[in-house]
Amino acid sequence: MSKIKVSVERIDGLCNLPMKVGDYFYVEDSKLYVPEGKYICIWALQSLMPIFPILAVRDNLEKTHWVKKVKNFSCPDPKGLVQFRLDVIE
Image (tube, rainbow, N blue to C red; front, side, top):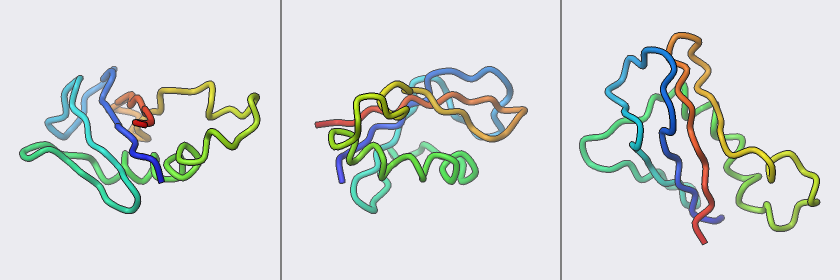
């Protein structure tokens, strides 16, 4: 699986965790790399997890596949409204 960088791009609400715009973590294979002293909400993580395997094989997808057009994904918390950007690191 490719290495995926997940960054906090925007917070439109109130996040209960001390996440800030610019915070990030990496997913590579089945490993999660969070910088020391930083956090990732498990609810946000569970909403992003189905996307990781799709991004890992995105080069094999049709040009019109939706995952090639979408970069931002939202936290499921309607009060937090954290927007994450997912980038595949080659």
